[in-house]
Length: 142
Image 1 (cartoon, helix red, strand yellow):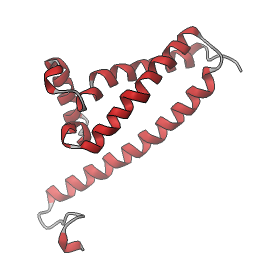
Image 2 (spheres, one colour):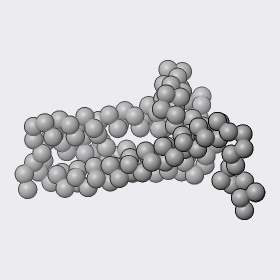
Image 3 (tube, rainbow, N blue to C red):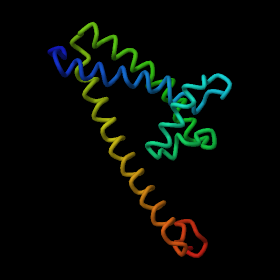
């Protein structure tokens, strides 16, 4: 199997390196005590959650199930990011299949997450525009 070279290698290095930074600067705030988080990083999270209308990262401390996912990300995904970056910088041949599987998985997750955000924004905009709109969990729907 041929090693990843050229522009694809640089693109994958950028992709995985940026995920290391995002994980350590933003995602970890969902599980770390607030006293451990420097103010510039807290401001970055606030900007991110507000700008991208991210309902999960806007109040992650109130979502225990989401915090458990972030813990799994720290245990499994973050070490993988470091491993894959080291493999790509050493230009080893066996990393190609692993990168392809990983990217396909993330594309699937991103596509589904985008659909979630789109539906969530639509629901919020409809419920704000009409006072008669019922919540999907409203007792009158049951």
